[in-house]
Image (cartoon, rainbow, N blue to C red; front, side, top):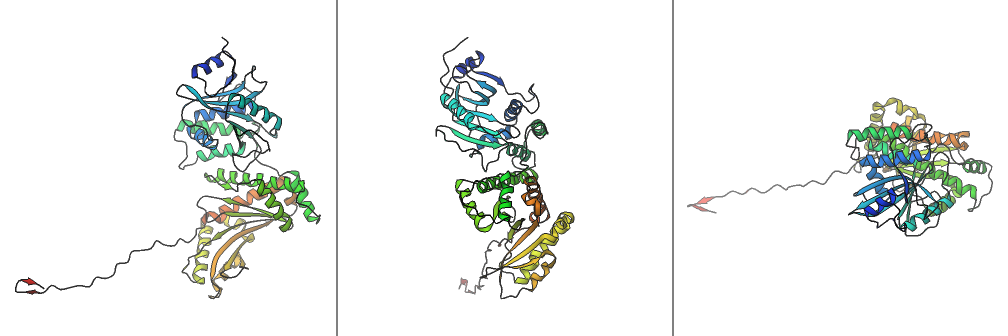
Length: 456
């Protein structure tokens, strides 16, 4: 049965939508957890991903929150969606939300696998498709990285009537792994836990088409070589800009890999166009680039710096010692924490021990007093007039030729981050000023004297 021409999706009555689907005016396939498709096919990835959203409540909530999609209502999960009378486009995936018998919201999904990049022309066609149906959001998924879901790895102008979101496959895997940890967001239903594990197993298979960030862009190597050769560069240098974008992708991957290791959402810096301009100036001035990784409840943010001239990586955290303690007491406080960490995991502690340093920052001075980890006891001898303000614990690793290696750099920096965190950061805590206490003054005691039956 042919119904009236499709002119919109949002606002349709549920029975109208059902009729359009049944008559194939809206061609589609239902999302399947086990699709009869070749492993690694983009449609297989789409079908399994949408089925995971359908079947796993906590996973659905996590993704829907990022794309500002309704979390209640009746949902339809479709793949291979097309409307021939409206457009030649075929949509990889679509989720439709129905409330009170009407379609109230919908989202379009475009999926890419392996090294396939988002195509600007194709995305524009999907935007036009969405606008014709009054669908308010388009979500892309690929192996490309962005700082947050509301950013796209490509620059594209679009109508304000539609919101664009992007997930890297690694970020989706990370969401799944976090849900399997024993924390406040973990999956309650044990059957859904098993489904999540199977979905992750498929996505992490070599042939699935899902990849981690494994190599820097070629411009990273070129920039390193240019700086080593002292070649002059200008702010509009395309090599410089693309190398910085590659750094942004790597810092996001570092945060995602740490999230998978720790079971909490580890954050990297939110990057914008202004960030690129700022970092271009920083690289030209300092011949280095840096970022911050934030782990909830860690002693501090982790500063990560890559130095193009020295070809090394530096990672550091800062610590606030007891305010009221002497310098000797502050040093002892720090040393006890390091000793405690060593006892908990000696292998992790000594893995980079020769590369670890402690800087002691003195009040009213800029240049810190620095000792290697093996000399940490010397902190106790700092003169009492030089008041210790805080400590910085850092590790420095020389990469040499690996610094310019597109694959070697990624492997080295991600490995060092895990080792530095495991060997030191996770065992450190700041001093916390104790809560003020109520002090009661002693009451003066009085003696009642009785005269002739009266109290005086």
